[in-house]
Picture (cartoon, rainbow, N blue to C red):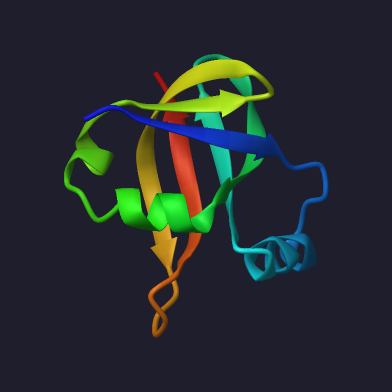
Amino acid sequence: MAYTFDAEIRTDLGKGASRRQRREDKVPAVVYGGNKEAVSISLDHKKIFIAQQSEDFYKDNITLNIGGEPVLVKVVAIQRHPVKQRIVHLDFLRQ
């Protein structure tokens, strides 16, 4: 199953900015690799949470629409809240 998500580029970085993102039901994430600079993004938590329940989310390539440009990525790391069922942060690697 192919996954496609719309991502927003984050310009406001740091712990406080990430907390604000999470309060707005967004997941902070970073895309790196592919001989390009790392890009900080945010994704819709509900869509990511539903998708990550499938095994294919971790195996298949994912398409992120970053600023209107499709980028193929794979999930490298996922951080979850220790008690709540929430995703705290995602790391993606460009393919």
